[in-house]
Structure formats: structure tokens, C-alpha cells
Length: 154
Length: 154
DNA sequence: ATTGATTCCTACCAGATTGATAGGTAATCT
DNA sequence: AGATTACCTATCAATCTGGTAGGAATCAAT
Image 1 (cartoon, rainbow over the protein chains, first blue to last red):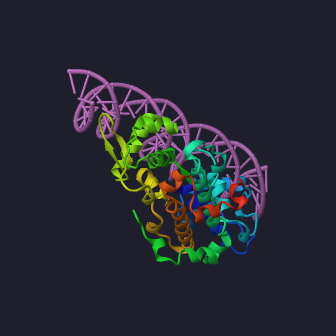
Image 2: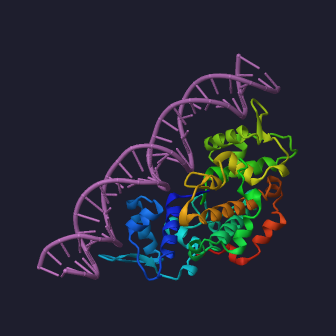
Image 3: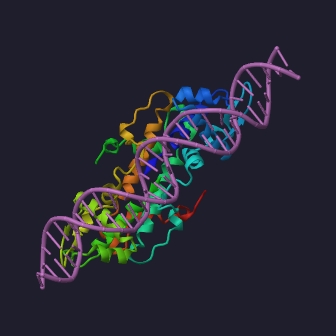
């Protein structure tokens, strides 16, 4: 279960826009690329995806750039990841709820569905405003209070 | 965040072994492949990985096959997935706790760590015995009681 | 109307991963 | 000896991934 570079860059870029003040200000691809150390040409494609997903708008020409289309507290990390990478969780190329299991493997479906639910819980539980402010919401922060969560078991 | 065919096949194959009775009985690659409709040659490689991870043992020759090395209630889905696909969650090729963020993207680390924690919770919370018996443990089953969990939002 | 900044679009690329197959070797039992 | 089974190595096409190149369209300011 990997989070792609595309997705990670996208969240960082979007957070950069969320941190812009005032909210109506635009930031150029170049500015975002430098601030977040993202390859510029690669970032171009990412921002395009974010625009197609209606998370940002673009303005061409001098003084142009990107800005968020909705308030930062109404865009979640899940929105951004879905915009660039598609469905949050899929199993063998299909969404869990599209899978068909028969026979003894059937209870496995429940595992994938529960997995997706938990992934959603985290990624839909954090907004760009949270990230820009630098403070995770209580329920998410609570997860990380257990030190075991920071250890690598493998 | 995809669950690979390899991982999904591996869990099904392991469940097949968990369902064998008595527990000491062996099942051949061929038998597992047919029962679970997994390409045989592909399954061969998967079972090899499971053996290297010390989850199963193999016996060659007539009457040979594979069997679980530990009781089925002491092998979790996470164990199986790690055996064939490595770390459960990684971001841009690294484990969350190996990532370094500086500046405004720093709180993002907490998101990935929380994500991994929740993924672990589900995959470490279900054993092969649970799957073989066809009943998910209470905490996992509880997640799936909310109907929203079964819907595709995208 | 020209110029410079900027997004937008299409194409391309090398390398890794994924899902799978082929064919032979080694061990084990009857 | 012969059948059966796991084991190993190599190969493969297709796709994905991370990234680059170059120009066309658009916009604001002069």
C-alpha cells in the first residue's frame, strides 16, 4: 500500500495554496515548486489534475497562478489524493465494494471494506486548513499519542 | 493505495491452509490453486515467499505440500501481506517513520503515521483462523455495520 | 499591438513493478 | 525406479512511475 510521489506532492502543493494569504491570492507553479522542492514540470501535471478535479482554479498570464476553489477547511487530504491517484483503496484493480468473492474467501471482503473505512477516516478527517495551521484534528492527533504507532515492526 | 494481486492471492491461499483439517494436513500448490482459482505458477512464487517468511513449511514428494507453521489464530492478515509485499504502508518509497519533513509540510508526517496505524489496526486485527471460520472479530465487524462504509463516494 | 509571464497540452522517456509463464532440478515417498 | 511434488531461474508483455521537452494558448501591462 504505497502513497505515490504524485499524491504526496499534491497534498504538499495544495497545503502551500491553503497557506497563501489572503485566500484569494494566487501562487505560480514555480513558486510552489521552489517552496516545496517539487520538480517543476512534474508539479505542472499535478496541478492540472487538481484543476480537473475542481479543487483549484488557474489564471494565466502575468500575476497569474493557482488558488483553491473552496475554503481550505472544506478540502480534505482524501479529496487531493483522489484527484491525482483515483480511488483511495483498491484491491486487484477494483474497488472493494465491486469485488465478488464466493466460497471460503468471502469474509475477506469485509477486511478490505473495513480497511478502506479506516483509511477514509484518516484522510477525510484532515483538511488543508489543518495542515496549513500545523495542527492535526483531535481524533487524528489522538491516534499518534501511542508511541507504538511510530515504531517499525518489520 | 492498492492491495496487489500477489497480496490478495497470498491471503486466500493462507486461509485455504488454515481451513485444512487436521491442522497438520498438507495441501499441494495444485489443490490450493484450484480451490481459490489462482494461476498455479504464480501461486508457486507466492508460497515460496510465505515459506521464506516462516509462515508455512513445505514437504516435497508424494503426499507433500504446504501447511501453516504456526496455529492459524496466531497469523494475521498483516503477516501475510508483509511476507509478499513488504511494509504495509510506505510513502514515496519510504516508511512513514523514515520520512523527513521540514517547513510547512511537517504536520503531514502525522497524517501518514496515523494512516499506517489504522491500516495496522485492521490487518493485524484479523487472523487466518477468523477468515477460515468465516467470522470477523468484533471490532472489525463493528466498522462494517455502518452502511456508509459500503458505498463508493467517488 | 507587442511583450513577457504564465498556464495548458501533447508527447516522450527510462526504469521499475506487476502479473504471469516456461522449463528444468532436487527431494521424497511407494 | 518412478511418480510426485516443491524449488529455482529465467523470461515476458503490459503497465505504472517519476520525470522531462517543447511549444501553443491566454492574459495583463505597456
